Length: 232
Image 1 (spheres, rainbow, N blue to C red):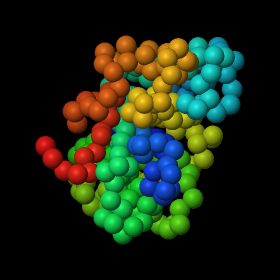
Image 2 (tube, rainbow, N blue to C red; image 1 turned 135 degrees about the vertical axis):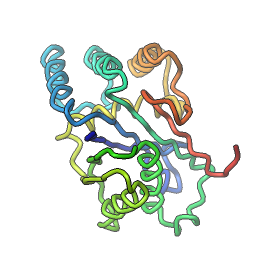
Image 3 (cartoon, rainbow, N blue to C red; image 1 turned 30 degrees about the horizontal axis):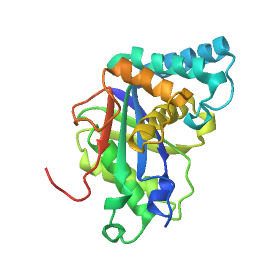
Image 4 (cartoon, helix red, strand yellow; image 1 turned 135 degrees about the horizontal axis):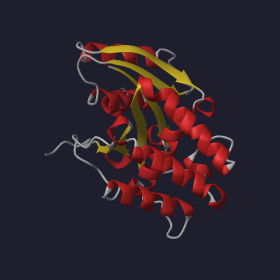
C-alpha cells in the first residue's frame, strides 16, 4: 500500500538553547493511506465552511471562537479509526547528552526524527513524508534522513521526503493540533477550564485513556517517550 506521513515539531529549542521553553522536544507524525488524502482534506474544508473557520490550524491558536471547529477536527481524527493514525516522540532535555550527536543539536533533531518514523514503517509499503519547512544549517538533512530510512527498511520504499510550509498543507496543520494536545500533557502546560484543556479532555475521552507514553503497539495515538539513559 501507499501511505503519506505529515510531520511537525514543537519546542525544537530544547536541542539548541541554554534556556529552552519546555522540558520535552516533541516531533509528531500523521499517517494515512494515500487514497484517503483528498477525502480527508475535503471534510476539513467542509468543517471550515460550517464553522466559518479560515486561516491556519494551530494548537497555539486554540481559543473560544475556534473551539467548535477544533473539537470537530478531533472528532474527524477519531472517527477514521486506524485509517488515520498519529505518532509522536518525546525527548527529555534533562537526559539529553549532545556529545552523542557531535554536539550538534540539528543532527540530534534528525536522529530523533528517524526514531519517530523508522519503527512504524512496515514491509512492502510505499511512503511519502512531508515535514514542516525548517531552516537547516546543513541543507542535506532530509536527504540523509531519507537515505537512512531506506537502508534500514529494505523491504519498503521511501519514495520521498519533502519540506513544505505548514500554512499551505492542511494535514501538517492537523498534525500540529494533535501534537499540541500531546505536548500539553507531556510538558504539563494545561490550565484547567481553558479551551485547550477541554480539547485534550475530549480527545482522551474518545481514546479511552489519558495522553501519556504508550506501548509501541498502540496504533491510533502513539506517544513514544524515548529512554535516553537506557533501562528496561
